[in-house]
Image 1 (cartoon, helix red, strand yellow):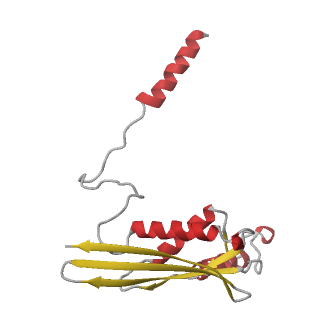
Image 2: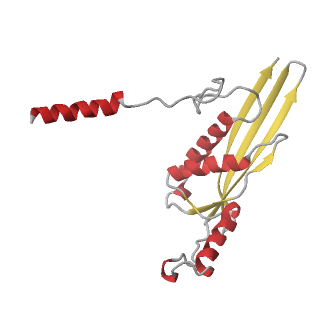
Image 3: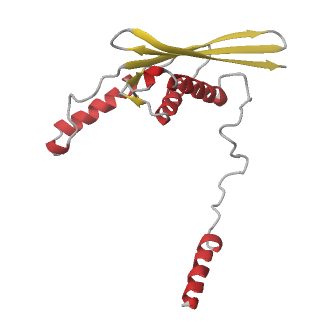
Amino acid sequence: MNYAKLTLAAALIAVTTGCATQSPTLGSGNVSYGDAKAVETVSNEFGSTDLQMIAESMARSLMQHPAMRDRPLITVAEVKNKTSEYIDTRNITNSIKTQLMKGGARFATDNSTMDAQTDELMRQNQSGLYSKAKSAKVGKMQGAKYLLTGEITSIVKKNSDTKDVFYKFTLMLKNVEEGIDEWQDEKEIRKTTRR
């Protein structure tokens, strides 16, 4: 009996330590992984740190608002980019939405995913490939109580030795049925580069 226990223990040790292999590294080795949450200061253009700060700040603020207590359905409109640079506003929207969902928020299908949603409903109900009893039913989608929309703007000032970029991100929660602005908040970011 002791021999069986020793053999089992030795096998477990071998599996967890000696048998584990290191994955090979491919490529030239000039690429390294970094901390995705580290402050990024490569340039004063909109970057990953800005996106993370905006998403966390807006989600925290909105989740504290009384309108969120009953977990209402929200739909999202595309954030408007009113800056002079290209900013992937869908990325900002997705990050805010992810943070809000972690806090318990619920989202209805928005314009960006409506085509995929209706295509799937039609495929299940009109292709003849699915059991009618087990297909998602047409006409059962729920309308959102609130619309989440926003914009990002910037002011850029520069002279011979300094470039200053001021970003302002504004997010609003609107009551769809009543046409009331329920909540609004802003996040401001300033980035300065000196030559």
